[in-house]
Image (cartoon, rainbow, N blue to C red; front, side, top):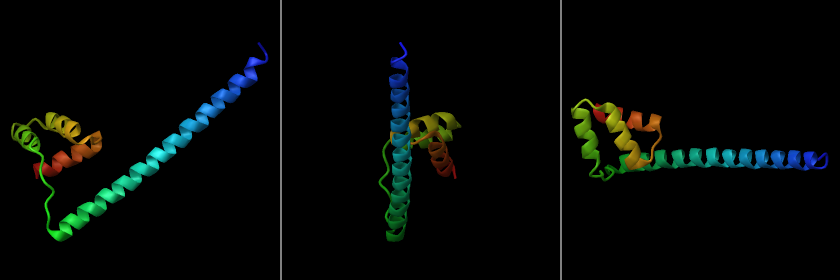
Length: 96
């Protein structure tokens, strides 16, 4: 029984290190993706090109006209895969 304790401790430490490393890589990739998206948005704006609109965006606009902001945010998240804060911000921009 005593011989299992050091091996178990090493296993737990190894798993914690792997999880930490994966989390850092994920955050780094997320930041890089956000920077790239901002750059593409700037390039499109500079060129005067509008991003093609998905047909479901009209569903979001209709929900907003009905005063159903929360449902509009849910549809936006389903459509784009955005997080809650990002979807809320995007829907609020559409409201203006």
